[in-house]
Image 1 (cartoon, rainbow, N blue to C red):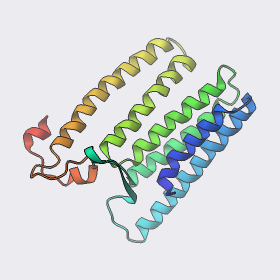
Image 2 (image 1 turned 90 degrees about the horizontal axis):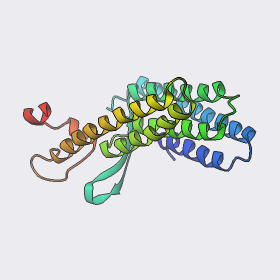
Image 3 (image 1 turned 180 degrees about the vertical axis):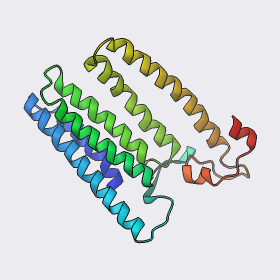
Image 4 (image 1 turned 135 degrees about the vertical axis):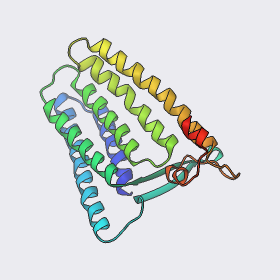
Length: 214
């Protein structure tokens, strides 16, 4: 398994372990182990990335992998990272790891809190590594539900109002984002051929000005 896929698989396995945790102590332990592994993977990825760049690798993206998973629409599990992605992945891993220990003594629905936090992390990691716009959109949506729960259940102040307001804003943004993604998809083969959601392929296109304005 490649390192980028591991960033998504590890939190999924952690969530499964949390579901079967028998008590709060086990839940805390699994959450700490899972986010700790994520942090180590993120540090390893950062060091490895810097070494490859220092060795002269000048590709747009490193650690790329591409697997077709929905042929009729040409949707791929396409992943890769650049410097910005690596920095954001490392930052996310630090925040998740710190979040577990900051919430270590939480008593109210602690197990559910850790599950929501790590599911949110799964969506964020998946978003940062995706090179396929449709797959990226799925990971983005994955992060919305746990974000609502984290604010609505464990937030402070008018938390229900804040959670609903944020969720509505994100969902409205998602609608516009989906329209933009579909617009790029249906204009990704101006001379015929296979339509694509791949960010790198779309970036090489000379899109019409009216499409860019849209």
